Amino acid sequence: MIFFSALLILLGFMLFSGIIVGLYLSKLIVSKNRNPVSLRPQHFGPGSTQSFNWYFEGQSQTGTLSINEICYWLQSCDYVRDQALFMKRDFWQHPLTFEQIKKGDCEDHALWTWRKLIELGLKAEFIVGDTETERHAWIVFEWSDGKRYLFETTTKQGQMIHTMASTKGIYKPEFSVDENLNTYCYRQNSFLFKPGFSNNQRSPEDNFPGSQSASLLG
Image (tube, rainbow, N blue to C red; front, top):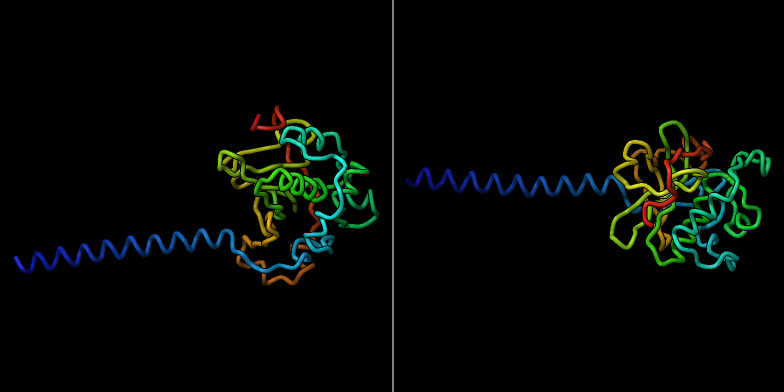
C-alpha cells in the first residue's frame, strides 16, 4: 500500500509539473509572437525618419470619423507609389499632408488610419511586415466587442476590415507601434538587422484585394 501511495503521489507530482511547464512554454510562445521592445523609427523602414508622436501633431481637417466613414474616405484616395509621387523610393507622409493630397502608398494610408482610430478612442497598432509577396503596412485594432481586427487600408473596392483568423498566413508582422507609442517586435531574428538595412530596405507598396463590403462592423 505504501508503495502504491508513493507511486500515486509521484505520478500526481509529474502531472502537475507537466501542466506548469506546459503553461510556461505556452506563455513563452505567445511572448515570442509579440515582444515589447524599444525600437527606433528607422527599424520600420527607410522612409520612417520621424518619431511616432510627430504623426499626431496638427489639427485634422476631417474631424472624428466613424469606422465606416474612415473606410469610405480611404477609398476616395488614390494609391500612388512614392517613386511616382515624391521621386523617392520610400517616403512617409504626415497624416495632414495625406489629407490634403489624398494620394500615397500603404504606410501613408495606414498611418492616417492609425491616427483616426486612436482619435476614436480605440486600441490600434500600426504594423509593418510582409504579405505573401510584398513588404506592406497595415493596422490591427480592437473593436468594442473586445476582438482584434485587421484593417487593410489600401483596398479601394471591397472589404477593408477582416477577422484575424481570416488573415492568418497572409499578413506576417515584423514591427509595430500601439496607441501609447509602445513598440513591438514579432520576429526574433529582426534585431540581427541594422535599422535601414536588409528587410527594412524593401518599401511597403502592395495592396490586399478585398471582397464585397468595406467594413465587417456595420
